[in-house]
Amino acid sequence: MKTLLLSIKDVEEALSLKEVIAAVEEGYIAYNAGQVQQPEIVSIEIPENNGETDIKSCYNKLNESISVKIASGFYNNGKNNDLPTMIGTILLFDGKTGATLCIMDGSLITGIRTGAAGAISSKLLARKNSKTVAVFGGGGQARMQIYALCQVMDIQEVRVYNGYQKELIKYKSDIEKKTNVKVIICATPEEAMKNADIAISTTPTRKYIVDKSLVKPGMHIVAVGADMAGKNEWDPGIFKGAKIVNDSIAQCVSRGETRNAIISGVIKETDIYAEIGQLLTGEKPLRESDDEITIFDTTGMGIQDNVTAVKVYEIAKKNGLGEYFEFI
Image 1 (spheres, rainbow, N blue to C red):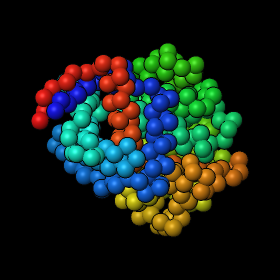
Image 2 (cartoon, helix red, strand yellow; image 1 turned 135 degrees about the vertical axis):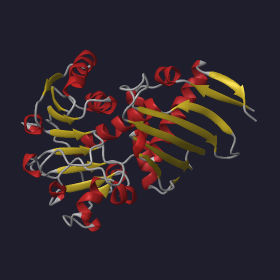
Image 3 (tube, helix red, strand yellow; image 1 turned 90 degrees about the horizontal axis):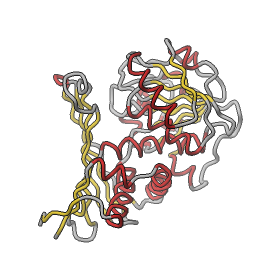
């Protein structure tokens, strides 16, 4: 049997943000409907090399496929070598036979499907007239969040803060080149949060950046960076009284910002409003007032990788992308 090998260039050619957003929505709905088997995430921390690796997998009954992704963040990359910070590989298997269908780059898929998740949450929960976004971070995910968000909302201004200010000059250039959004580089979190309708955090910090006093009524928060126990971008106090939505409650209470709020005693697990799939199916109402603070805590799910990888595989086969090799 032949297996398809797809490089990052092949994956990039096969992907479109609109298609990924639609696929991730379908994945969330499938998960909510019990059509997905998704084991716990396996995490490996490598502090001596300032790195970490996550293994996420799932079986999707709807498309009869199995996916396994190994995704790493090595935060010295780019400083000590020419490698990107985020590196990943996805293996896609036939759910009927177990045969290996495809081996593909997973770094771009991770970035795009995570950006899609944030955009979906904002489409559902942010005020419809939201124009200004605060962004914490300046890397690939900080870009993907805005690229995806601009697919679903009319964003006009991004106010970005990062501890590494030099990164933000390139960030500003990239965002303004690919969107119609004006980017303002901020010197403090307070400056970034000024007049923000939506706030997005994408950093690996373990000491929170944003104090609860900076969160104003009506804001929608997309918490991306805390995808492992110990990471913490937001003052846990912001969760008190907010409408809290998780991608997966099981994951977020064990490794997300929601976990931090529970451990701090600010909330209990029963205070979590919904999983995002419940909003997509109409099982739970969306935003119910302009003053409501809404939080989407996303730790990243295997089903997101699965539906995106299957979409890439189908398009690659149709368009003749990649190379086949004899694997079995």
